[in-house]
View 1: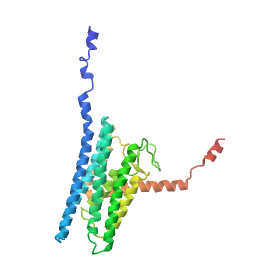
View 2: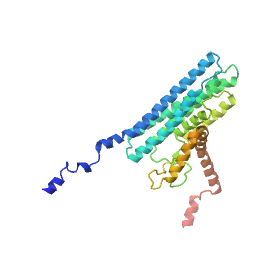
View 3: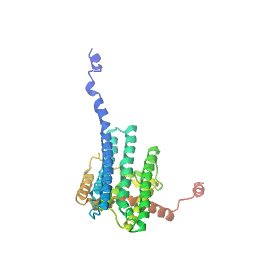
View 4: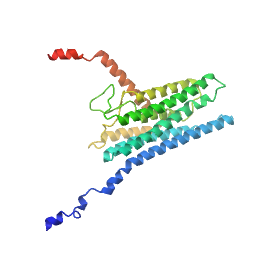
Length: 306
């Protein structure tokens, strides 16, 4: 009788996994993704407000232009980069990864890290210059080239996401350490972070000199190419936050948070450009290393074995 009672399904109910709690955990990463979309939408609204403010200033011949709208858009994209990194890590830590979450995350990335930074790059870097056609013919050309470069950034980011979704086991063309994980091409959040960091570094003040616009055009083209390239970028996925002694991580992240809090413009600008050009550095390092130590031809290896 005791054995029969012990096997009763109601008797062992406390040993069963909480089904409702388990289902609720799947919502947690989606909340971060939805916040990501919200920040992207807010950034687009701020870019529109900034463009409208500039049009009003031009119509009324007001030399004072409120640039804080562009800075707010850059800040929103920067916070979205943080939330984008958290939703995937939380999904992996809680074991709640799903096909729906991956598709939702990709669509959110196209909005927040594709459309929003592309609009910000054009409105901040080329819109004011393109309106000054009567002053310099170069401004008209840069306005059109800037629109093309901004669209190129959006197209490259979307292509990068599509390749990431269909790649079962992507490998960079210049592999690094075997124990580390790398992205194939610069991730689209990092590309959007470069645009946001540069705009935030300038406190949202739009570019007015054609030389600065040319430099900005080159940065957009380079970022677009790096996203569709097969070069390696460190993914930070091998950092284990569940380690038994995370003291070093706490100190590093604490110092980084303090530096961003007090010197956000300089620190974020340095981090974004350093990560962007890290792929270029490791690519050049790999090329020079192969030239110094060329791989052994297959026929030589066969002759040595025989």
